Image (cartoon, rainbow, N blue to C red; front, side, top):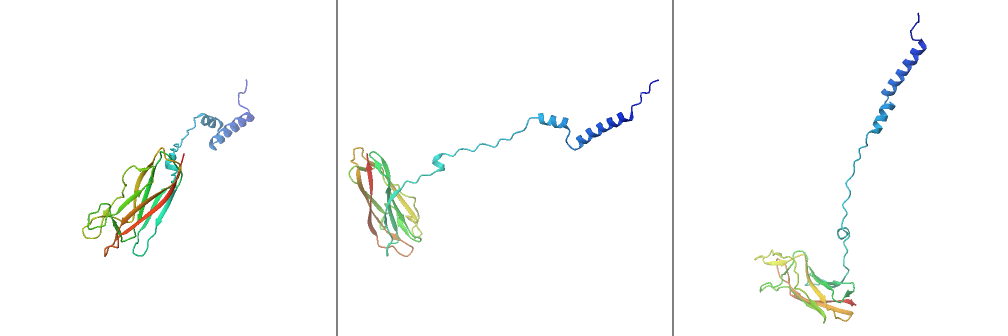
Length: 207
């Protein structure tokens, strides 16, 4: 009669194998489980692509200008500046001329076409032959005066801009543009003597 009892050496080998598999599972090193995990698709999170900024918004190019300045003096606290393009222009181009009034704190100047007895601010652009003003002056916004009556005035920085066109047949060369102006600075106590002045600047026209 045969003895079918398993030999001790065989039982030890099976127990050792079971222990090894359990040990691998407990420590997270089960090759069967790891293999299954590796076959699962990897989840990829994509960051939103940056929106490209237009060149015009990313880099603002300032136009170089030529400035002619009337500085403040005793009895005239206002600084006035005439500005025209510094770069050479071509025949047929249109450019801007600006006149800036820098009015100190507590002072004001009248608007254009202010009613008497106020001294209205006036600006006259003087152009050489071959230059033509396209439109009237673009005036800055006005505010209400602190003085009695609350009429409209300019305070702080006031810029007047006018567009000018160069004739197509103009001879290339250096040209001068001038601007005469009149204004009166006032504060809560008094109005100073009206100021009449003019500024001039030159620009180059090329082919």
